[in-house]
Amino acid sequence: MMINLGEVSALADDSVPRTNWSGNFHYSTNKVLQPTTVAETQAAVRSVAKVRALGTRHAFNGIADSQTAQISTLKLNDVSIDAKASTVTVGAGIRYGDLATLLDAKGFALHNMASLPHISVGGACATATHGSGMGNGNLATAVRAVDFVAADGSVHTLSRDKDGDRFAGAVVGLGALGVVTHLTLQIQPRYDMTQVVYQNLPFSELEHNFAAIMGAGYSVSLFTDWQNGVASELWIKRRVDQGGAAAPPAHFYNAKVAIKKLHPIVDHPAEACTDQLNIVGPWYERLPHFELKFTPSSGQELQTEFFVPFDRAYEAVRAVETLRDKITPHLYITELRAIAADDLWMSMAYQRPSLAIHFTWKLETDAVMKIVPQIEAILAPFQARPHWAKVFTLGSAQIAKVYPRIEDFRALAKEFDPKGKFRNAFLHDHADLG
Ligand SMILES: Cc1cc2nc3c(=O)[nH]c(=O)nc-3n(C[C@H](O)[C@H](O)[C@H](O)COP(=O)(O)OP(=O)(O)OC[C@H]3O[C@@H](n4cnc5c(N)ncnc54)[C@H](O)[C@@H]3O)c2cc1C
Image 1 (cartoon, rainbow, N blue to C red):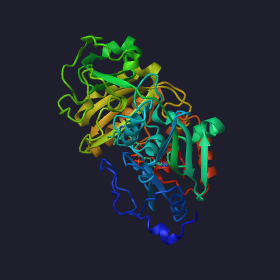
Image 2 (image 1 turned 180 degrees about the vertical axis):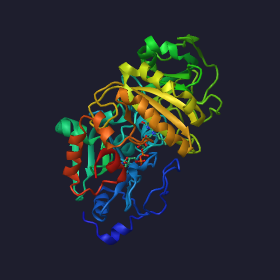
Image 3 (image 1 turned 30 degrees about the vertical axis):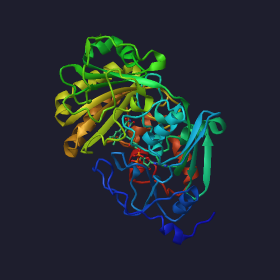
Image 4 (image 1 turned 135 degrees about the vertical axis):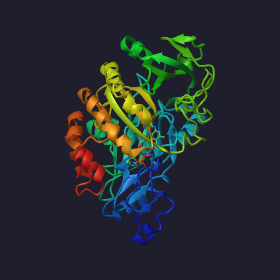
């Protein structure tokens, strides 16, 4: 179905905020098109010279920015379950929290979720967003097929079954191949989980037990402010079908089990957090740290995250710790998570089991921009990869050193976008996609 230009102008939506979620980044265009169908997405792409896809605006940097136009995917949110194939095909703009509720009601689940359920599936997969778990790949590893509209408005599908390596290049696409309209995700039977929090785990315990600690549950997170040589909290999320309802021991590697619900930042109110204290609940209310019905914070924050090979995790943590007195004054909290290796070319966990070292900063941009390069320098010997959607300063030359398939990715992007319709300043500066 062809859509004419008059109809395209009807897709303009001036209600989409012109900043990202955090408010630290102002988009450079007021033009937002909001298609509701694949045909409208094709028409929207054809109608503009340059454009970027926009999901739920949770990236902390300019990756979604455009000087010309953005295509919001939020009205592409249909859901179709194929129970026989154990897959679900979703519109790219659906939020994980909304999808999870629908899946659970039909008896299905996803393998993992991020710390909050408010992000779009398309935006999360485009940037290799992850949760935690030694055996869990990032959220994009659940993708079995991806449908997108390329620069000339044509529709393409790449699938793991049929397109192998090219598919692996397209999934974490950074918005550079086109506007993803639908993703087909692997699903599994629904499961219940529990969550238990321990307090004050000494860093020294990580030296010989890091893998055992991060593997103590299906999904495990450590939180620290880098002071006193301790992880202030250890969150262990266990699956009931893997023995996860058993009473937790009172002590775990010298950490003590919490007896009340805690926020990752010890003195913050825990109301918005998902249930802890070993209370059984559905997977989608235990894997994320925060509940869908709450906005997890005021948005007054910045985030940075670096991925190091898991076999050097302890060394990397101790290296960052040497910067503690510079980091802590500007930090809300650091979170350490484990991610399984994958084969997605632009994934931060590409071909290496990883530890992600995350920083939730106060919204003190100048101070943060001074400390981030120091963290990057101290983690350079670990070939650290920055999270694509968070604050970092590494340029394309440094990025190229840690992404062995980047040349292939540039070629793939060029195939679907020969004239650079989907390129922006961020992709130019950090991936040499100009
Ligand atoms: C409070 C908070 C908590 C977070 N927690 C985590 C976490 O636990 N783990 C983690 O890894 N990350 C986390 N993030 C980062 C977040 O997952 C990423 O920023 C992710 O990209 C957000 O998705 P989005 O839809 O909001 O993306 P947007 O900011 O809207 O876009 C990000 C990128 O994705 C591209 N994109 C979006 N949709 C499409 C599409 N349909 N087709 C093609 N490209 C598309 C955009 O062009 C852009 O390049 C968090 C962010 C916030 C603000």
